Image (cartoon, rainbow, N blue to C red; front, side):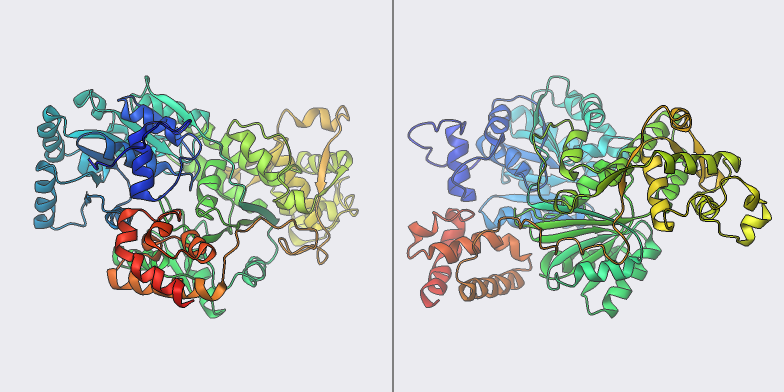
Length: 619
């Protein structure tokens, strides 16, 4: 437990005085944000909690501060062995006694950490779930509990418990044992991503029936959302990156092969790009991840095996070259951008084939039928999001149960609104083409029929004789692909993965074919005239903080880089970019003034204060 002098008077809305004192003295922040104070009060008081807070929203403080206020050690369950070291390094910079136990430690190092644990020499210990669940570690905790030396259990990335989620970890299903064996120790489960179904599953599987649920807004206003139809993905990606050289980012691909090909291609374009997927050796994954975390301008090209729990605050963009399988996955992955609150981008390109691939993966899996049904629903919601003519942020927040009051003004739909047209006749033609060909063919063949293309496959099946042959000349191929995607998104058509993506009519198609309903569709921008997203003269810029004197910021960044390199830690562990900018703006001339800068607590001021003040004075 860290003991500090509490404020003389409780601060309205800021909760426990001791917690507020630790926030200021240790972490260097003047006040709690959002629901942090309420969550911390609940945990300090011994109550269980489920916290849903967006990435970058300050979830870690919700258990770190209570662990420092309460007697004993806080036990943090994390599924990410590779990132525990950085998390612990960041706490050590603050003077907090932290350690981790996972398979990366040799036997002697593990014994030494266990000895510190038993002798009350730790404030926080991070542990992988499989290590926590072993009888050895549970036995250590049982020796501490009678002396009230375990302050809390924090279960990070709690959505990993969901069997139909995008990050399912089987060992998370066993964490309810904490309630059984340590009923007096409060627990907090935390995640940045969970729809209503996943929230309930977390509560049920972790035995959190009595937990208070804290639900923060899912909005990340600093992230600009852009989705484009796939045409020439490498060319489109290069155009997107053209004005983002020197920035850190993540590019997600669906397959390992595509990851390797894209990383190699980007390297050939002069981009510092690295690959990350489960097919690489553990050593290569570790090295690539460390470079990404510790260098300023690395682009990581990865499968979804990379990213959960990434604490790098200055990721400026997240790109998806393939459609994610759910909005939860999309939100989680895009949320790795802009954790520092600075303007960032989530850019995605996708095509109809993505839906077919995901459907096939779902249908061919060994999952129970109920799980497959839920996964199909999630994929349908993802597709509907892509094809929506409404503000991206409003659609996304609605999915997670929020009711935004107005369009965001910071997504492609708001910045470049699509035209909406009466597509009833086009929809009828598309559905008729599918129906008259026996619902046995994919979009490619149906489009050839509608456009009157006399291809070998068309002749093979006699489709040139159909009444729908050549009736679709009012649209080009891209226009018809858009129609079919939107009909899929609306649930009027469904793709049969077992029949190579054959498009089949649903019950929703009947009233359209009968002319009983009107179908409104979004119109695609004409090829060759489509503006480059994010560079249109109508773009409303995201507010950006003033960086102060650029030369002073550069000097501070150089100093930080040298410190990080000498200590073998990521630069942000020393000080965040925002803290450097505030120093450059405020130009503190004393230790006391330095302590007024957000992100500089007592230990950092003592450790780095003289050097920082000297740099400011020379600048």
